[in-house]
Image (cartoon, rainbow, N blue to C red; front, side, top):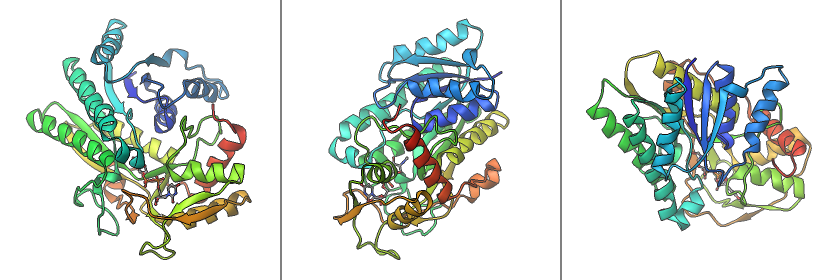
Length: 349
Ligand code: WQD
């Protein structure tokens, strides 16, 4: 039974990935500072399995702490080793992820996302753990003219959030280039994860006012208070930005496929775009949400948001080919699952 350390495992993407890891037979140690997440997501993960009459109590351990504290990270590795269940690999989610917030507070993003990752990676090496799946982002591509973004598209982040993801990618590349026969590294560049687990027991649970569109659509529909659509003068079919929205469960599944691939193959570093390859505009998403959930989403148009790019859609052929990973949940399912999560948990966890 392999044991995987999941940083940020109580968060939106982390918690959904933990469900898939447990379903795939892994044991997990979750590290989370709970500054942007709620421990109740871990209780709900146990509930998901209890509903299937599976008790996962020994398979999911939680350690509260921050990656800024290297001693804390090392203590988790040492505890696992003492239990004779050393950590075999890491899925690294922990980090701040708001484009707009990063523009206002770049230092906070560099400290959390880069210094925290540095501490983690250094501690991994000191504990002979050299398998990592890193949560990167399509934001590293910045303003690209590529209609479908390949992994070989130019890396040119245009906001501090994207720059921090780029910095960690560079650190991993430098490390790999000095120890090619040791490291197994998968850099996953996410597009726009939305939706929720079909049980509606876990979902996106922003503790602060969300900056990203999907929870804002859900709140606008629930409270019937308008959201702002940032710009209707973009060069697209309806003037609003286009993104590659991917169901959180497809994204979680991509992590398991990447981890399995690393563990069962020789040391290597791979960059993979984790998106559906299909783009939807903000208005497309709003209209689909209204249609599927039979609810109105009030909105007004406002100015463009600093740091935004017009279109970000993945060419995901590499991930499909290398991982045999095929995202198959529709935008309608994303809208339905996201709304069901809200209906069952109006105040989140
Ligand atoms: C999507 C679209 C906005 C809010 C996000 C995360 C980033 C990364 C990629 C993981 C844009 C528009 C938004 C609003 C709006 N995820 N919008 N009104 O900027 O693509 O990046 O996904 O790595 O962490 O930030 O997502 O949801 O913020 O914006 O019109 O109130 O919705 O202009 O076109 P983005 P987003």
